[in-house]
Length: 394
Image 1 (cartoon, rainbow, N blue to C red):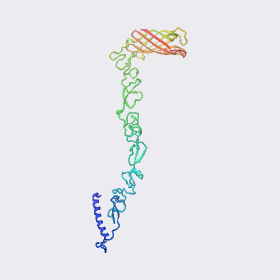
Image 2: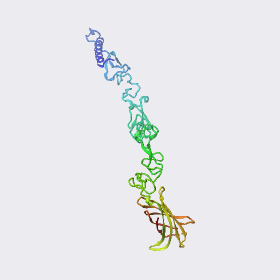
Image 3: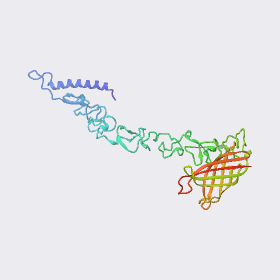
Image 4: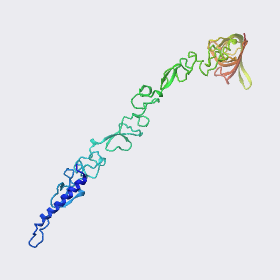
């Protein structure tokens, strides 16, 4: 292709030659007419350079001549006389140019060939990936993306190009979530440990996952995963186990086995008082007393268990004469007791009440007590008050 400057010089030379020839032709010869004047001038018209040979000339470079110079034509209208694909009647395509020379380019021209356009997808979250709501245009509209298949167009962190992370969401839109997705970064997973006794502490080798599998927990360090009372931070009690996982059974690592002196059977009495009061006046009451025993046995939970009788000599309905009391309690190495008392007061209906009990145990004595309140029946005006105590020794 000739350089534009060379083409211009050639056209100028041609125009000069044409002007000379036309002048001679239009003058009628050197002699002129009888009156010495040249012949009448020839009729001129506009000619347009058609450098791209598309049959349409450049309207901005018209010349008025009697005949068309080389490279010129009588038809103008070309808006881009360097591209044979641009001229009146051409097909408007997506190329940023006004192909059909109607003053409109690409999307601005309603006649643009949509087959040359690009498909864009609605991108509401601005992450560069859109949904299946699409348009075909030459230029990407605002709020649209060139790539589709966004599975959540309301979250910019979820799209086909996002990394999969542990959050219960399909981040990269491949229909796989968290650890089920092979693209998940292993560093994202958490360590979990088998918790067989369900005390929220596990043991053994770690299993790595995004969320804990069934019977697995995040905390390790359980020293006895068959005993729910034994785990880091547990309360050390007399039961033959290392409850706090500090390396010391029934005590500390430095002073273990502190409960040995408390082991044995303690025999003694039980007293129970319950009354209904109106103000400070007792309107109904039940008192019972009995005997029984409780034994501290290591290796069971709770370690302190026993049964006592409670004989009632009164005549109030709803209270049988021979009542029973069951004691279940834990004892720490210092002898502090915490547990429950289950008092069965009416055998035909096995009516019973459970109360909390506290106290102390030494190598020779067991002293416990507790209080409570209850409503024996719907006719009770106020809750009945309860006090009880154990006094036993070995």
